[in-house]
Image (cartoon, rainbow, N blue to C red; front, side, top):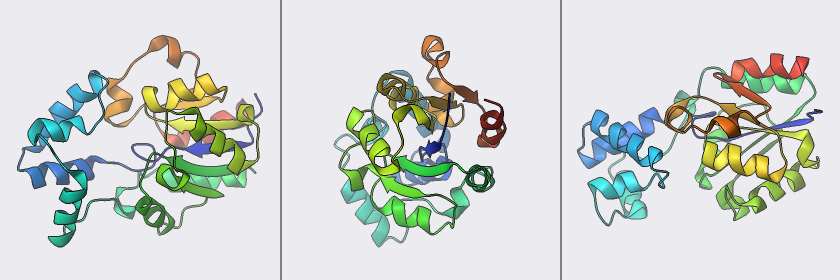
Length: 214
């Protein structure tokens, strides 16, 4: 296996979404532990994460809720305070190793500015909304290949979700590193698929050493 590029998912790979979901629970007037328990059930059933909002507010309108939060000066989104502590050093180390580092995940356009403001080391930053296609569609990985200039077999994709990261990446013929953190990383399980991953890690800090010896 020759890896020349490493691409990272965003939510629960680079960004800890705990504060974000906690803020939504507060906005909806739901105890955080209750909100998190329902979210775990949604993940276990393989439903879209928006189902957790529908559970508490049938007919939930995300755009309207985000606008109301912005007006109340409680905007949705993330900032540098939500960055997992192993991200900055890991990305910098991978670039020192001569690897192309990309960040690309299912995120709105606004995530680009938020990530760019963190002064992380990377070669490419893109979101699914900017590309007009999102995981798990193969066209998302077509863009990863096209934008990086490397063959699929030379690109390692790192993510925390079996449904959106592991399964479609392997099907595309791209090696994957499964990161076991965040709710999806701990709730979802598929031993057969995980056995096919190039790496299974509990922290991004493990990745440089594994790539050096692979």
